[in-house]
Image (tube, rainbow, N blue to C red):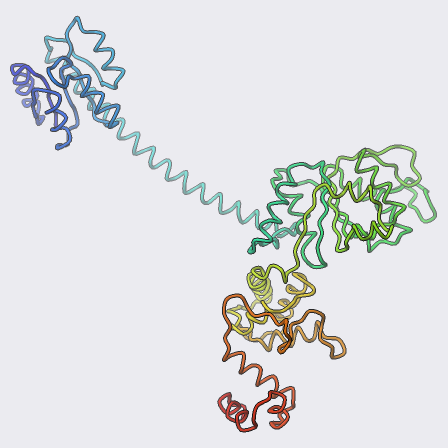
Length: 486
């Protein structure tokens, strides 16, 4: 073992060095703390033996620098006199391993060095075991996290929240609002947006965000899909024999079924006026009566409403109660249409089509650039729902792993064109409001597509195609030959 001895008395240095050398150790001796500090930094020592009282830098200062400032793990044994116990206690507080009283008993010194060696071995073994333990914990933790992520993904897919993908700043703001509102279940939330923008998906995200329990009900009801005659019983339930056709045992309604969780009232603007005042009471008191019932039912529910209408306009037209509008409007989230968050289009299209291809045992590679530009520039009047349906059709009809623009245009034609008319909002080349892609445009590819489409539109007639495109027949023939269409 390499040992550094620091003492201003030469006789002590010599005697300690001779004794420890006989024990098989390698010894370096210096006469003061400053030299000791220099030697310590230039050699690899496993033990330091230092006197406390020395001229210049004393043993306490040396100890402070090594153990407190530099936090070195090396063991340090201090040498002290009988009347210097205050400094000895201070040295132990600084981190000294042990102390020896003058005159030094060599047998005691040998025992102390042996204990120091054992302590160092135990410390190193502990550090090794701790490192191995942490590595194993890290490996197991990553494995558990991986399994947890798989389970979480499966769970989100099962409850229908896995489709909430955020790629644009507009949707990041929507998700941020949803997370903020989700923390207080007493706040009614109104989701506004066009049909197909994903209002129910956001409602489910609010319900499940930060939720530790998995068995909390989420009950959805479409206010526009239930007849006015049946709506009250559907929402509030009924007691036995409450009306003609009612069950003999009675039935709980959607509000009661959602107790402890969330009820999602989709298309709230379609709710009959006669029921709006009853819903207002539920919002304010969390109590209601079943149809034909005399016993008050209490519920603890979060209420999330959604609409694709302008509720303010409905209030002005006396088709929606103003007091209910104020009540459901406490937490308001506006979900922008897909055309206003074009950063979402390509990532969503890729996500939808890859999943659709995988379900059918096929592999999807990519959209060609023209197809990407087409997707980005299209108006998407049906929003995310329309985009998903188109990708499902592409996966169903597509025989190749690469999708070109004609694959998309034909499908969009079949889904959005009626009686030969252009669907509302679809961009048309030549119109002033035609929108260019954000990043770049492959003009040559677009020209080829325009010529090919015009040629097909005119049933292969070169003269009509040239007139349609406003170019000479000779120029058209040259382009068609390059495209191997002649």
